[in-house]
Image (cartoon, rainbow, N blue to C red; front, top):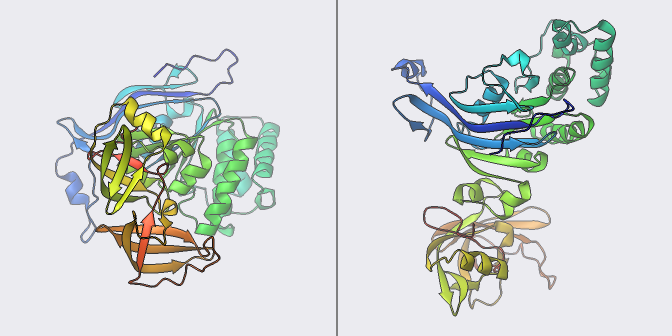
Length: 407
C-alpha cells in the first residue's frame, strides 16, 4: 500500500494502515476464571501464537480524504479492535498508522485529531445536551462564542436544537445518539470513528438514523470510519466496505463490487439478504465453453464469466455454485431444471419466499406473486415440487477451498 502523502493545504485527512496487527498476550487462566457460570463460550477462530492471540492480521487499507469506509463482519472478527487502534485506545502491536500523512503509532489519542462515537452514547447524565456537546471544546479552552457557534451549528445539522436545554434522560435513544454524534462533530475532527452507533436502536429508528448519517456525511468535511456487523448498514453507508473474518480482511470494494463479485464463499454468504444459495456442483468445459452442472440442470456461463475463467485457464472441477435467492427462476418445463421440494412458503406482499430442499441443500427462492402470464404463484404449498433454473450471468463459481474462480 502506498504511503499517504502529507497535505500541503493541511485539509487532507486520509488514513493509511500498513500491515497493522494486534496481538493480545497470553494471560494464563485469567480469562477462564472471568467466565461466568452458564455463560456461552465465545467461538473464535483467531490465530494463537507463542506471543498471544492475534486479533487483527496484516491489515492494509488506504482511506481517501472524506471517504466513508465501513468495516463489517461477524462478532469477534477484529473490526472494533482495528477502529480502537486508529483512535489510540488500543496499542498497535505491529505495522504503521498514518493520519494526514503523519505516523501516529505513538501519538496520544487526544493529539490524533479524531473523534469517536460509541454504541453506548456515553453522555454525562448531569449535563444538558448543550453542555454535553460543549464539553470537549471547553477542555480545549475554545472561546465561549466559538463554542456556542459550533454547538448550535451541529445541533442544527442534527435537528436537535429544540433539545439543547434537556438532560439525556429526557431523550429517546435516537435523540441521545444524535447528541453523541453532535459532541463528536463540534470538534471538527479530521477523522470521525463510529463503533456500532445504531446497534442499541430499534429497527425503525435504525433506518431513520442511517438516513441521518448519510445526510450528515454530505454536510461535514471529514473522513468516516464506521464499524458494524449489520450488512444493510454497510451496503447503504459505505463508499467502500471492508469485510473481515477472524482478524483478516476478506475483501475490500464498493458495496456493488462485493455483492456482484464476492472474493470467496464467506463474503458471498455474508453479503446479501437472504443469504446466497450454495450447491455442490461441477464446472465443465465442453467445446471451449464453461458450464455448471447441478442436479438435472446444466447452464452455460455468460460471456464475461467465460472470459474470466478462460483467462485464468481454470480446469473442469467439482465446485460450490452460488446463486442468490432472487436470481432463481421457476420453470413450468421440468427439462434441464433443478428439482426442489417446498418446505415453507412465506407470502411477503409483492413476492413469495420459498424455503425448499434442492439436491440435498436448503435453498431460498424469491419470486414475484404474479408470473408473466398473470398466474398467481402463491398457490404453491408445503410439499409441492418446484422446477428451478437460473441464467449463466448470475452464477458464482467457487473452488472447494471457497475461492472465487473468476478472480
